[in-house]
Length: 216
Image 1 (tube, rainbow, N blue to C red):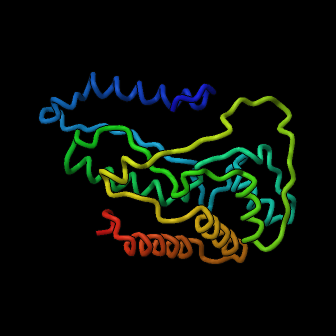
Image 2: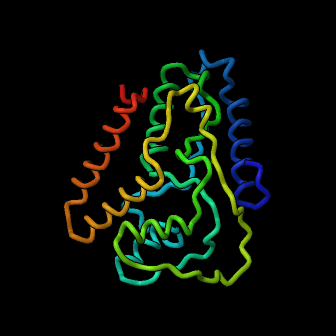
């Protein structure tokens, strides 16, 4: 929140709109009457196996690596809070449990971010994916237009840690290793349903070993 580019401003606008809706139609003080608790959630830059979206760093990297082509990186020094998709999903589901159990006590704004508070550059991500894949290279590409976007984005999840007992499971490198493993399995023609079930089970096992509340 608090950014000056349109994308960042849209996040703040969403919070204002949601709070106005909450206070107008589902005021917390009258929860006993309407039974609705409204929360908002924000995640970092979510990444994971199976994402083939266009103009996104990790999908573009993996498609290039599978095709044996160089990876085009538009803004190598941009820093983003990269996180595996299972991280925010675990937080969202655990928050939903709390909303059902305790209602408006948890009807607020929540962040679910990555383990690394410093943020990781797009160049670091591309180079790590190349190393994990085993070959490849990246090149700096000119986007061809002056797109205004924030160079540094971070996300604090201290509130989720303190009140939900939530924390990330994977480091950024472990998240990328999971992604590369997924795409290698995809390229081999493996049963991807079974692969994804195995990845979810591995994530849950790590979370259980860390003693996270949502696994109890």
